[in-house]
Every structure is written in structure tokens, then in C-alpha cells.
Amino acid sequence: MDIITAVLTRRSASALGAPAPGDEEFRYLLKGAATAPDHGRLRPWRWILVRGDGLAAVAGCLADEDPAADREQLVSSVVRAPLKAMLVFTPHVGHRVPEWEQLAAASTMTYSLMLLLHARGYSSKWRTGRLCTSGALRARLGLAEQERLLGALDIGTPDPSAVPSARRAPMDVSDRVAVFG
Image (cartoon, rainbow, N blue to C red; front, side):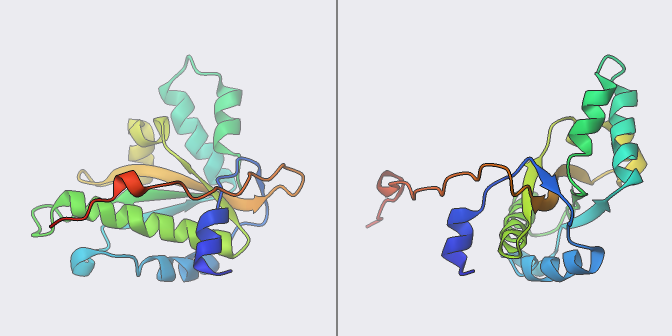
């Protein structure tokens, strides 16, 4: 798949099943994604891969923190893909490369990973919400004080019976470009 096709046809999918990339395949794709722009080559991120019983443990952390939540609904919202890849932002505090630029590097790498997954026949969906703000999950994952959970990619194979999203038509962006001078 060429890059413009990947960009124009990638869609987030909620209905994801097996297979998902294994650990080695994920690392292989991440090697490619890690070539995204990253001033200072700091790699201010790390991934935590969660599968199987780990998904239930993540759901349990979230449910324990919010007893009023519908536990069954919460579990199903976490266990909706065979792989949940959690992105941890690990900024190099006090580095000459400002934190905002390190965050941009983590974001760029993540989008590159999503395109690589798509080109490989997988689909992914970016998830945030209570996952990112849960103190119980933060503790369970062993995040350091300066680290932040930015979100998670739900990854798997798209459901072939699901209606595919229409290809995005490139938008007119002429009002978003100015020429200086």
C-alpha cells in the first residue's frame, strides 16, 4: 500500500477481533514508527501491551475507582480489542528539547504506527478518557512521577461484516496556508 492510500483509507474501527500483531510484530512496526521526527532522538515514550487477562485487570482498576460505574459496560469497553497498546509519555524533564516538542514526537510516532498497522491489514482506534486519568491504573502500570498515560490504541483485525467507513475526500485547505513575504 502506498503512503497516500494508507493516509486516505485509514479509519478508526470499533469492531476489532483477532488476530492482532504479536509482540515481535508490534516491535517490528514500532521500529518503523520510531523513525518519525523526534528532535534529539529522545524517544520520550514507551508502550505497555495489554492482552487477555491484562485487559480484565485494566477494567478492574477503572471499575474499582468508580463504584457507581456500570462494571459490565466498563469491562466491555476495555475488552473490545485483542490488544490494547498503552502509550506512556516519558518526558526528559529539564532537557534542552522542550516538553511540548517531546509530546509532538510521541504523537507523530503514534500516527506513524497507526498507518503501519493499517498497511499491514490491522486496524486501530485511539482511546483516552478515564484510562488517562485513573490513579489506580497509573499505580498498577507502575508509571513514574513524571510519566503520563496519553491514551491507548485498541488494535486488531477489522470485522469483515462491519460497514467500512467511506474514504475521506481531501479537504480544501487553501485557507490554512499563507505565503510569507
